[in-house]
Length: 434
Figure (cartoon, rainbow, N blue to C red):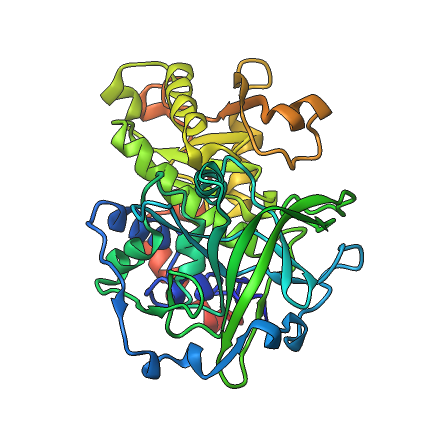
């Protein structure tokens, strides 16, 4: 097993696993990562490349029919209160519409229900649920492949909320400038990553279910509920020699729900804000907030360039964020000027605490579509997938003339450059290591 495949690293390389997975240096900043994804969104997709089956490591071992045994793999019980062993926490679910026009690559949890069955979370509004519904309209089970231990960039692309009809594997090709390698599955008409560690194939049954859950999720609290879920009937498993199973322990921050979903949703939101003509400088989810805080920064000249007050800008930004797929799970937006490092939680807390007015600093958006896992939601909000959302207005530019706007009282802003250079050049001689 491989734990924390997208976890945080040490100081100076905090985002190394994310950055390297997306083709960037280990030292890349959060905004380097986000801007790289935003840039790739504007490029045409690059489709996968089919390679010979004999050259595909995922075909080194094959189980078919009665040979299939999900218990052959070291699948852990991740949390003590989980309802079972979850083999799918960081792999790619691959499914295609019946007409072949759209292939979706996504991540949804799957629990082992038996030697050859999985109980699957497939929410109807998500793309996997949309495709399953199209197969159900024809009265047919949905062919599916589950690829575990895939190219490191694929789980991030799977977390990117691309529009319906977009193929995530093509976007990964756009990101890297070349298509990923794929081969045909054994028992379903789907292409799978040639370099995957494990590939599980089969169909989502039309009328069979199994109990699934509870399983802890990204808000960070112990889950309590189990319910009948769609059944994945496995017809084949292929795997590498000495296959490695990646595992994510969902729960309190920071884990891969936060680093993967948060990073990629922030990139998509930034892309959509700029497309809407708004002066967005950056966007970032606070990992430490368990994705409950989206921070958006705007250019410091927003007031001069737009000629509107901050409340109107906050309304426009909220309308874009809360109306799209990327903002479905966003309950709270913190809106700041870009003198704040929005990837630094200390900076964010300081700006939020000191810049938002306790009476006038909130712009509310009633009854917007929402994810149902936040613990503060009422039962009715959880059932309806609708709840109020808010933008916390931390903008200052319309409150002060340009030459009087508050400036961070820091070393950099408090001393002439020659004094700064003299102090820093002698820093180690004063007895400090860094």
